[in-house]
Length: 188
Ligand code: IMP
Ligand code: MG
Image (cartoon, protein in one colour):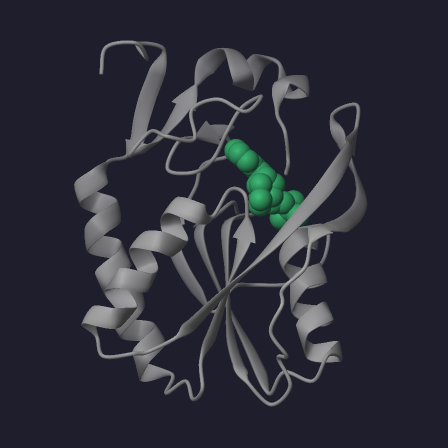
């Protein structure tokens, strides 16, 4: 594709694919039982789809659910409010959950989702994120399984967007103009 010259590749397809296989092996080593994968929409859809196939290859048989969360911005600053736009349908009581998100930044999204699932009686909520931005946490949380440490840049692709664009890219990259204008980004 030639229409995206302004995007600098940070993590290419091959690197991501290899890391997904390693993550699946690490997840399998945690011996999940009656596993339910809960992918946080929208940003994690591509990561979740690839990770699920990698989980299959390491012999796991997870069920799959989706929750659509949104964290709203007040100007360029997160208000800290996370809302549920679409909830999971399954009963999570007594189950091992693997929560899948695209980026762990302030930590509010993953914390909100984890607390919600635990409050509903999940036995264990493991978390995996494709990317983790160090030093950006507003709440104290780390993911159990991290794909890559990400520099403090606004990234797109592999499911992640800026103003609803670029989710289709098969790699993670940086749109330089977005880093100069953080108002452009959409946290849903
Ligand atoms: P937090 O950890 O609650 O601050 O929010 C993480 C969410 O913000 C992620 O699930 C993404 O949807 C979004 N987000 C944070 N940084 C970026 C980025 O660089 N690109 C695209 N989305 C981002
Ligand atoms: Mg998100």
